[in-house]
Structure formats: C-alpha cells, structure tokens
Length: 197
Image (cartoon, rainbow, N blue to C red; front, side):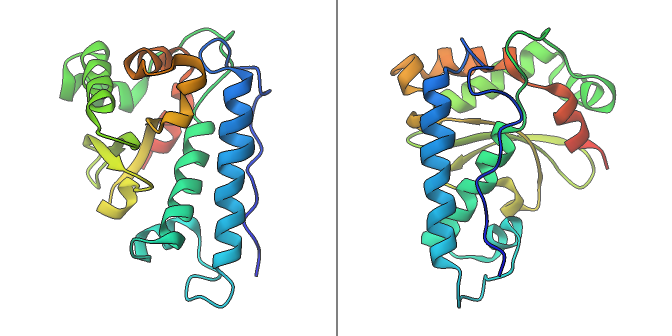
C-alpha cells in the first residue's frame, strides 16, 4: 500500500510572515501535520481503509483514531495550499465565486465578518469552512475536531484553522486577530478553482 506523505508547502516557511510566522509553520506543518501522517500510516495496514483516499476515509470512518488523523491531514492540506506569500498583492474573489458571495451576503466584507464570527464562536478546537453545495450555493460551517464538510456532502473551498496550535505562538489567545489577519494571505485563485463545477 502507498503510504501517505507529508505535503510539501507551496511557499517558503517564512513566506507568510508576519501573518503566520516561520516558527508557527515549523510546528504546525513540520510537527503537528507530520504526526497525523505518521499516525495514519501506522493505523491503516490491514484495516478496511487501506488503499482509500483521505476523502473516502473521512466519509466512511467512524469517530476515532483513523478518522481523526485522516481528517486532520485532509483539512491541513486544504489549509496550507490556500495561501500565497504575504508580500504578494492582496486579491479579492472574481468570477462565479465573487458573484455568489455578493448574491448571498451582499458584499465580500459582510461574508468575511460572518466567517470570522463563526471562527471566533466555535468552542474548543476545530475549523471554520466555506463550502459549496451541489447547486453552487455557499455555506459557512463550524467543524469540531477533525471534521470536514465532505461528511455533509459539501465541496470544501476555504478554511481557517482554529485549533490553538495554528495561532498561539503568534497571537496567544487573540483568535479574532488571527482570523482577521488571514485574509491578507488567502489566494482567491485557489478558492475559485475549488469552486468550479
């Protein structure tokens, strides 16, 4: 069986500074995500999930170690690949995604405000997601622990990690400040590609 591997970052470890520090990337990607990969690779051999994709495991596995590690790998792979270096010009969504945000929230700022509020309001560890349903309508969800919107039949597009290890070295207990800062590094081109049907 092919083992899962730690994803390569599409930018240098210090490229997201000052929004996310090189130190946080080192722990978050190099230690936390690596541990999920290592744990899942130990759990899969001989199990019914051997040979499945991450999405298949997350859809089918019950709560427990296999689900938690697969879910966290899937979530982190989407998280780390949605950012661009902090030095690049900030973008806004375009095309169909921009139109849908405007249609549902009235403005990008109104969408961001609700997204941040859902992230701040999520109790404990987890993720806040923007996803699309089968008709292309958008929905913001709060996912506890390692959960992912694919479990609800949604297509995940954008996520902010609200586990403390994602921000504590840089923002301590200021989760709201962390969430607000992340918009500066979101690569909307990636989110638009994920939205396409």
